[in-house]
Amino acid sequence: MALYDLTEFLRLSAVINYNLSAASLNRYNILKFILGGKSFDPDSRQDIEKKGIAMEALNYLFEAYSGRRRRLGPVAVLHPLRATAMFSNAMEDISLVDVLSLLFHDVLEDISPKDFDDLKWRKMEAKIHSLFDRLDPESEQSLLERLEKLTKRDHESYNHYIWRLLETSHDTLKRVQIKLADRLDNTLDMRIELQDPLDGLDFYEIIFQIMFVYDYHGYVPEMSHPPSATINGAKRLYQLFKNVVLLSLIRKKGVVHDDKSTKQLFDTIAQASLKEAQRILIHLIGYHYTSVKKQRTLLLEAMDYCYSGKSCVITMPNSSLMIDGLFSSYFGVSSTELRNQRLDILYQDKPLMIEASIAFIVIFSGFLNDPLFYVRGISAQGVFPQQGGMHNSAIQHA
Image 1 (tube, helix red, strand yellow):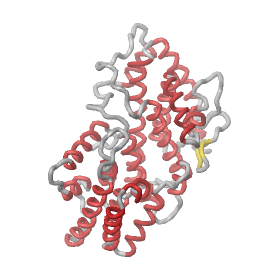
Image 2 (cartoon, helix red, strand yellow; image 1 turned 180 degrees about the horizontal axis):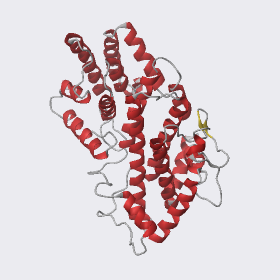
Image 3 (cartoon, helix red, strand yellow; image 1 turned 180 degrees about the vertical axis):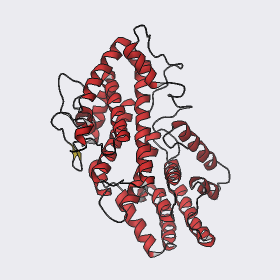
Image 4 (tube, one colour; image 1 turned 45 degrees about the vertical axis):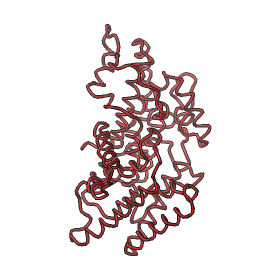
């Protein structure tokens, strides 16, 4: 399946959710599905043993996440299951430790003794200890080290967390693959839809008509405006910013290299993010900012901004260009409370959201077109405005 395709993602969610809702939960069916029919070991007896451990892990997850929901409403356990399925799809070979890393990647952040009574917590601890006891010492140590790196610490910034994840070791590539699968699921899991809003649309034809066709009357959606969502357009743009941070730091670290599976996951996040930016833009011009003349003005302004190379760097706020300083002013704020306030302000500014969507389309196209592309000004310490703009050809030598 095309991992970046929202329709395929909705089907993946539906199949897993259907199995989860069965009166008699069949862990093996779910495991078989998320592994894509792949084996852990060429030796059939070893493979059965390892799949038994994986099913024990599923049992723990179902209990630990029982009753929990994602922000949009679906059951929380869907996230690690889908992320594992997408990871398995991208890999030529998978190991038990890889799958356990995906299944448990959020456990240290999400699962806490305060969420359970004492007896239940002791039983859950006994289960996880029993599972770890079934691993050989090397696998157990590898899993523990991965989970420590994959867990964002209290009061740790997202940039520092990603940089720590990328610290060089024998296991760096696997950690990156796991994080990419995690972010891919989070990127696709930002809207509840019956179908992809881009289905049946030619996005670039709409943009062409706005720019060049004098008597074009504008894009008119077939459906009425959907109900307000928990994750609105500004919050979706922030999630795309997190992907820019992740992909830029990976590129700066030089982690991907020529590994086929890692490159596939990297490119898939860029493609999924690009598509999401298109959905946000189409929604804005279809429902909120419908004047073709005003749309054309914004597109021309954004075109000048991007072609100057400014979309490739963190910029300072500029009174003459509303998109200048977007990342540093709205997304790169260290305080969660202040960032949420800024995102609320951004949500009210539909013209800026339109230009931001265009900038993200250009940025993620850059990741796909140029193997050396990344956004300058993004580091482990945060986002810092850089002087001037720069074209991709200059970035290659930066």
